[in-house]
Image (cartoon, rainbow, N blue to C red):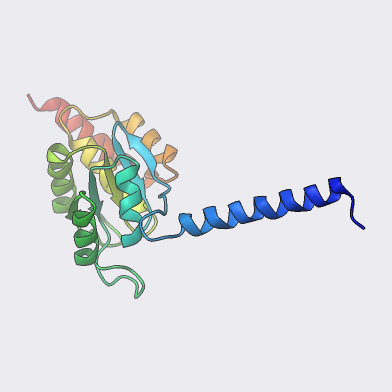
Length: 183
């Protein structure tokens, strides 16, 4: 015959497991999955691929604008920008689709991101497959921004977000120097 302490312990364990199970179920319902966003600078953040059911959580986390830098169709399981835009709108978020291909970052994408960041409600979350293109495109846009961070601070921000822009160091420095030379 189990002791009162043993019965109490088992009851406590069963209750705790029930609460953990309930919390896990609630945490995986549509719209409640949090996003591991990483700060770049100020109120600009970066994340890897988002899903439509994460947008409600982004709203709760305080984000106002989402920028999708991943071209549609890169992967079969990737939600298309039109679905992400619709889900963002349903959750009261602004959404911008700015596809950036793998490899070299096109100058028009940098210019468009710079304009988008200048006019978007903050905080802004940039995303692509892994966050790499988003962080790198931001680095070039920030380097071009009139009152942007210096080259070392930009590279440090990208690194603190878990990404690398080492191969862009010369481009970042050239953009920072060019804005300093412009009256």
